Image (cartoon, rainbow, N blue to C red):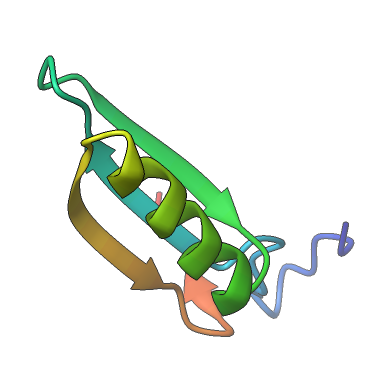
Length: 67
């Protein structure tokens, strides 16, 4: 992991793809993935089980954490 740099508070996420979905019991689940190809594979898998995709997001190459 990148060493903290007090002058640069932007970090590249290790797994920038986020999938949020619900199953047939309306339980919410999520998965962090490393590539768009992985994301597409998981989408196919969970939808084959009857899950509903709530959102699929690519987090940008940088993000700011405010505290």
